[in-house]
Image 1 (cartoon, rainbow, N blue to C red):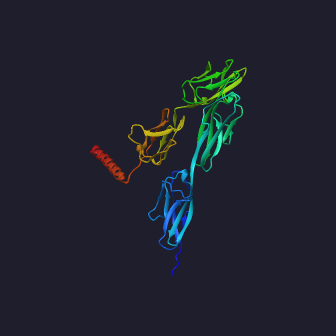
Image 2: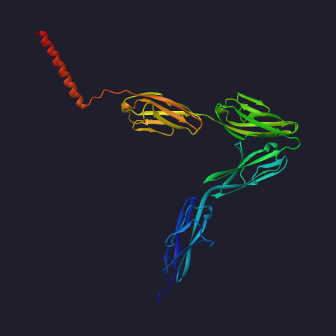
Image 3: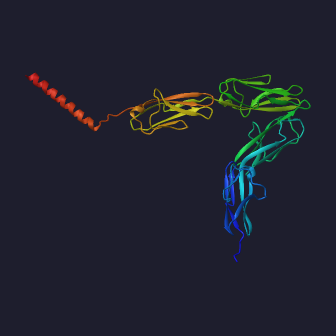
Length: 392
């Protein structure tokens, strides 16, 4: 009498880790047992397989395509034959960038002295780390889920950011807190908390403040004096012909006898590129290497494009790089000319030229010697013929 054995199954790999959107496969292997063996795949909690799970024709291969966070968990392969059944498990880990939710979401309007608490909940794998920051400030406030203000002050008004980060990415969610005055204390607000402007333009920043008596409004710049070309009138700061050095955080301060309040505007100044070529003139011999570098000051990213004036295309063998370099390993006589570099960004463009002169050497080919020899023979014969005629 032949004994019938229940199947023995195993799953390889026993565990797999993928990023969100990637795919992973597990294979169920039958080690022993009476044939035939039927294979089935289930979630370890006996839940049905997700809709992005695919099973191969013979039932042994399970593939999770375009993995989602909800696909994480254990998967069980069950082997069944006439003698019984057995199972083996595998674990799928799905890594994904943080997802963040704030409670309450804001904006929050509170009165001076009230308590405020904002809870930041984040999911992600690996488990993300949390931090709170205030917009316009580089200081980290807290490294926990809840940001608390036991008794808010006017200067607590502003935009706060909860940042969740793991090695798959970083996610930010912002909440605005507006502290409304009480007892006549000032509350300052600005028309824009962030702005990006173009170099050379005129910029205005408007600050308003509530309070009784009417607050006095002043403007300052963080860690620097206000630009030389500035005026302040009625809470409006005007900057004329701004430059890149004027970028930074501008502070509106409203003050009266009951206290003070601050509001912040972060300004970034973008500028078009200004291009130069190094060197701008070069003399080479045939066979030398040509190396030109195009440099540009301005807001990044900056793209560089090389052309040769008066020609349809660049010489054969010319190489250009993203950082503005032009290289020809071995120049030829025909590679001379004026080369133009155009540097461009999202604001504008600028160009610079370099003049390349290829000074050729006298090069004789083997066939040229025969022609030269014939020339000299002809010259000598003409000379002696002239002497003979003269003597006669």
